[in-house]
Amino acid sequence: MSIFTNARIVTRHEVYTGTVSVTRGVITAVEPGPTASRAALDLEGDYLLPGAVELHTDVLERHAIPRPGVQWPEVAAVVSSDSQLIGAGITTVLDSLAVGYLVDSGQRPRNPRSLVDAIHRSRSAGILRADHFLHLRCEVSTEVVADDFAPFATDPLLRLVSLMDHSPGQRQFVSIDKYREYNQGRYGLSDAQMDDLIRTRLLERSRYAKLHREAITAFCRKHGLTTASHDDATAAHVDEAVRAGAAIAEFPTTLEAAKAARDHGLAVTAGAPNLVRGRSHSGNVSAADLATRGLLDILSSDYMPVSILHGVFLLHLRHGLPLADAVAMVSLTPARRVGFDDRGEIAVGKRADLARVRLADDLPTVRGVWCEGDRVA
Image 1: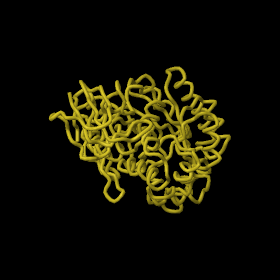
Image 2 (image 1 turned 30 degrees about the horizontal axis):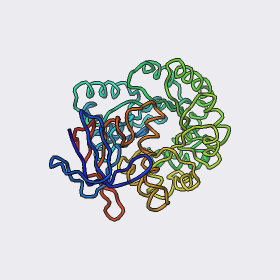
Image 3 (image 1 turned 180 degrees about the horizontal axis):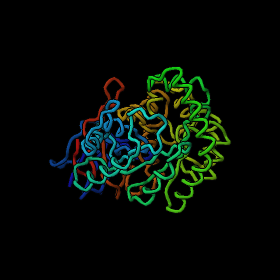
Image 4 (image 1 turned 90 degrees about the horizontal axis):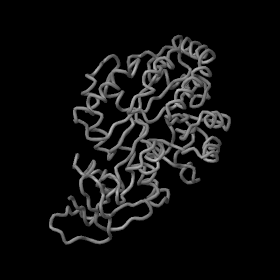
């Protein structure tokens, strides 16, 4: 048995100083007040949170290809990514891997197969600290996306499939100027190369977007996979997501789309980096606006794992959300949306996935992490 005492415990509905007991990886007691047990770990008044459940993080691809054209050994990349996630208090992660690439720049794998295999090998070897699953991000407007996705439809680790369209003039890039600015900045393209990319992407979208969206949606329905829309900008986009059976609206770009998603029962997801920075890097709706209007359900670290708990405490300290509600946005709500009913909150009978957090000048710092009761950081 493990006992944590003198902790500010964040349960689903309240925060209080108390004691948590764990037996064989499961929480067996959550009680107010200290314990007299000498075996207890004194958390010295630090917060004790449920480990974060991350549905959308791109960091594994960045560990796999740390520089353009540099391919890191896949298992080593998975282990490196795992360390970064655990250090941020993330104990369950859906590694988000792209299927269908937009620019063949050498900055991401052309096909996620090798990384998926590396995740399986790493799990089997018992060398990961977080619990890893898959989120496949399907670029529906690319030529090979449906064929590349098909082999993964029955993968036991696959928990989420998002339907994305990052072509010019669509969703995140309604503004062609923004599309040009983003891609030239990221990939170093000349004006002529950028013009050619826009022409190519528009042609591919006209050929493939509708066809592939329907094909991947059918795959997900057949195999009972949770789906998410991505970068919805209009109510029409949300209607399209609803017809596809989506449960999550990832990163809606406007208040209109966020409101429509909420009206249809989709869980609205925003990026914690957006919240930390105070704005979207693409000029879209801010996460703070969504939160203060009651339109935010899930907070995702996206490309910066450390942002997830920073975002939680900003929601509480700067934007007035109860801490228990803000914590649920990175734990219980995402867990439930992808079918995990054994984790995501500090409650009797749940997995003892826990993070010890201390505030330093309003910045949360992770001082300890436990997965199924075992200390991993």
